[in-house]
Image (cartoon, rainbow, N blue to C red; front, side, top):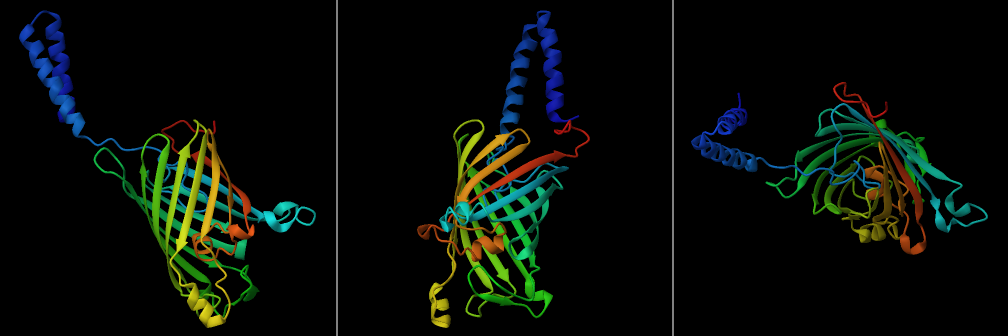
Length: 319
């Protein structure tokens, strides 16, 4: 029997004694209640739901999913809104899509996989919540590691206009890792910062580094119970001048900036947004965003998340 259980048992016995008029035990009861409250006050209270989903817009959040739960993601990015009304209906005539699954191994550890039509890329990743924000600790810290493979033909033209060619399957691989550090300041506001490392086994130009660093920022502001504003920005720590000197052309990529709104409806989360990146995988939207907001290269998109429960000890949300 734990200390708490022992104290509760003693309190119950003294309460019964007090009911028959034994005043000294009543004082002892008050002392024991004080002891119980003091003990409970030492236990940290963990912060819940800093973000409503495991993804903010393109990037990940500090959140994981519950044990034995499955997330199904549908992510869609239309064409650029500056592509015209007659020919392309403001980009709605074309789209890129990613389908993904995430499964909670524990309440703090998930694994995920997906397939994107952009460069026909498959990705695998895992995410673990190392530290949790609580009354005893100010932030949540989550670690993420991912891997991707491009399955395009051996030679193809990228969105940047550069030609990519492969001579082995190993050249198709890329890897990334992130440390997501976030804090829920109150019921409305949550922010996170995301130091990121991306390694690409082969880049389209030798002047583009295989190892690239970036710093991501993201946040959400809750408007109502079901509506939330969200935004994220990934600053790539690259040197555009190296590309200019090596090729005589301007660096073709830009920092990814996205804004949107989340709509929560039970087991679904709808994320509607505008972004300058059509990519939905870290290797692509952090290091290969070719769109520029100032030029009107803005893509409308959405994410849909559906959660399924395989926890036999709890009521299935789908029933």
